[in-house]
Amino acid sequence: MIRRSSPAGKAINLFFSPVLEHGGIETLIVRFSRWLVAQGETVIIVTERKGSLVNGLDPRVILLEGGTETAIATTLRRQQGPASDGREIRSFSFNSKTLIRQLVFHCRYARDARLLSGVFHDCAYIPGKRLPGPATGINWAFDRILPDRAKWFMNGAVKRAHELRFSREFHDALVAPLPVTVPEGPARERQPKAFQVLSVGRLVPWKGYNLAMPQKIAELRAAGFPVEWVVAGDGPARGGMIERVRALGVENHVRFLGTVPYDQLSSLFLTAWAFVGVGTSLVEAAAAGVPAICSVASSGDSCYGLADEVPEPFCVGERVPGAPLRDLGAELKRALELDEEDYRRISGRMIQYSQCFSVDAVGRALLNWMDSSSEGTNLVDCSLGRKRALSLLKMYQDSFRPTVLRSIGIQENIRR
Image (cartoon, rainbow, N blue to C red; front, side, top):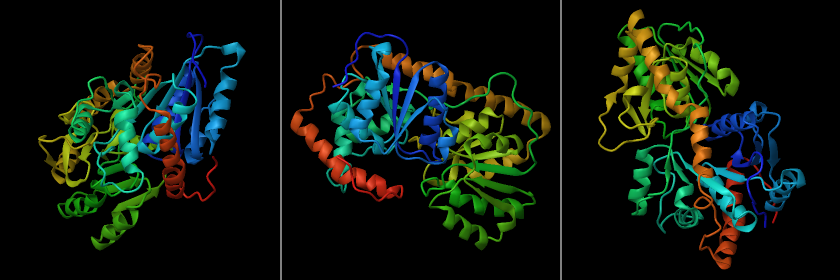
């Protein structure tokens, strides 16, 4: 077993990722790893498959593709060689697909590493024996194996949703926003194109605005607004979106850009008049000074208004029970009608709003949380017995990992 002795030098930071392809969690890993490397920390990313985001990684990041637990342990030991003996190990996972692998690895090899597992959706974990396949075991592991202090909820609404489902309170869990790269110094000068609305992110069904926006564009154009919708991203909902755009006759006013390299997204924010979306791209748009309308997950016609009008701190589109909702079409119309003075004022509000998501501020808070106690975020005192550990490992190898591999297009024999 890899053991951590007294702190010496910078830490080793271990990330688990299914595939480094475009998505909110994956771009979070890229941003956070860049920041850690800039602080002089060592970063190791374990992924089942490389993707387009690999090009955005700092060259000093150690990337392990498809590595076995033994290979990961060997790499950690190499980084903890005589010259850096005693370095802390921090370990991060950001969804259920990676949590199970994180727990399997640390139950076997590095039980005193400090763990942090992000919970970024209000239905990320759902307990109950009715769930098919390995899902029941994953949710049990989240509840019973992962220490509460190692749980990171992106806002209070997500935390409350999971407390309600698991019928208990996560008193010791961390609530902190998603870290986003916020430009330092004066904002880049923008030249927004009037009536251009931008959306960025994975095109998935639960982002209801993807299927609602074609209707809103048609209605706005019928009302005399020469609006254009620019969509950056790809995913399973794209086909349905294109069908709806054609059915409404607005195909000449909607542009599908497909997947845009992460480092090129900033250029889209410079020309957008307004933004509609959720997640980290909402904050990134606001950081650039774009009036950013926060949609509501799984609700097409509803939104919260502008990003700084969301009633729940750090909420970037999650449903907040009881929160007042607004009509998406009306909010778009409000943004498109802004005069120059009001536009400049709201742009300043957006930039101010984004500051609490700064990767530097949030990153330091996360590391301080993990490093502030020698216990509480590791598995040293975990009550998981050997039989349960082996059962968890078998479930991962026989059921869950093949499912993950198939979902990202990999067919191969599972290495034990």
